[in-house]
Amino acid sequence: MKPLVSIVMGSQSDLSVMKGAVEMMEQFNIPFELTIVSAHRTPERLVEYSKTLVNRDIKVVIAGAGGAAHLPGMIASITTIPVIGVPIKSTNSIDGWDSVLSILQMPTGVPVATMALNGAKNAGIFAAQIIGSFNEEVNKEILAYKNYLRDIVLDSVAEVKESYSNEFDK
Image 1 (cartoon, rainbow, N blue to C red):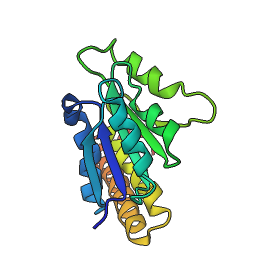
Image 2 (tube, rainbow, N blue to C red):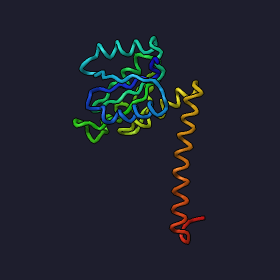
Image 3 (cartoon, rainbow, N blue to C red):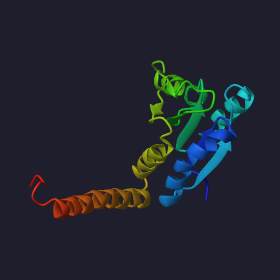
Image 4 (cartoon, rainbow, N blue to C red):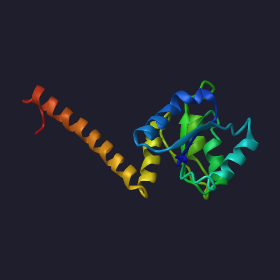
């Protein structure tokens, strides 16, 4: 199947974080591609990659980058496809704040949906929700996932209530 989501990172060292987005694509049965494009070391590749997204029927891009983290914004400046940015706390990072602010502070006209630091799993869920807005099967998978999350909390409520029945706020 042709990929609907493109997961891209600035370097292979970002893969340990970006695996969260991969896991969510697999969980929701969404076809995806995974690649590396460095905004600073391969700018020609970045432009070529970004220009081909629409023609390849990619519906969402999840772009993770550390340090100066220009990758998500540069992709968003070239394509009309929604871009979800994942700031990554890398070895050359200033506690991740440089990545967060580089992705978060986009100028008007170049929006990037920014996730939490190292928030690739949420990026995958958000991408799935975008796909689910026009794909009923994916939407059902997301609903099942949200019901699963709800059930975990409700099970926890029951456990706490049973263990601390006198102190628990009814």
